Amino acid sequence: MGTISVNEMKTLLHVYFIMGSNNCYNDPKEVLTKAIEGGATLFQFREKGTNALVGKEKVLFAKELQHICKQYGVPFIVNDDVDLAIELNADGVHIGQDDESAGIVRRRIGEGKILGVSTHHLDEVKRAIEQGADYVGIGPVFATVTKEDAKAVRGTVLIREVREKGLSIPIVGIGGITEQNAKVVMEAGGDGVSVITAISQAENPLETTKRLAEVVFLNSKQ
Ligand SMILES: Cc1ncc(COP(=O)(O)OP(=O)(O)O)c(N)n1
Ligand SMILES: Cc1ncsc1CCOP(=O)(O)O
Ligand SMILES: [Mg+2]
Image (cartoon, rainbow, N blue to C red):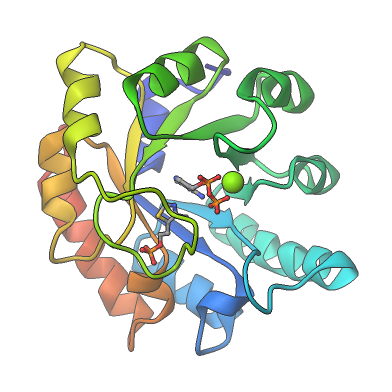
């Protein structure tokens, strides 16, 4: 882990909103603002897939979203793009198993930044811990249409396994999570839920995030 405490990290993971420009029907800045006002505790900038912005446009857009996060005191995490995270002095980075190794990324971003790693098996969780992850993302818990190359749906099996092994690493579930099924992730031992579609395509992102936050709060152990 870096310098963030386990408890602080677990609290930040409660309602982890992830978004890129191509995930929204409406103005993404408005969507992010409403999500935060509704209770999002952490934000991940994930600009990838069909029609994603690149180059200067991507950087500019990232800066706009980072500015919103700063105004509300919500940490801003960058997905995949470690160079961008360093350039923007972002609060952290999220990487997957096909990205740069967690150990290298930890050394690049330093101890003071948040490092999240996607995991699908217990050995990946253990390796992420050894290499300095502050939290692990586990999923897809449910079917998702957002990530074209998503791994097979495994429900909450791995979340339960990690807790049964007595590992206290902060865990966030991901994949197809909504206010209707978030409770299952928390009951399995998750510390929070990360969502893209549930908020980015909600008719009312503010009210949806409020309801999601309520489910997480009611089922949280801290
Ligand atoms: C919180 C969280 N968990 C998992 C992921 C997925 O990361 P990855 O497997 O690297 O896939 P991409 O998101 O990069 O397509 C995530 N982004 N966030
Ligand atoms: C990035 C990612 N990693 C595993 S599933 C997923 C997509 C989650 O998006 P949604 O909340 O729309 O299912
Ligand atoms: Mg990735």
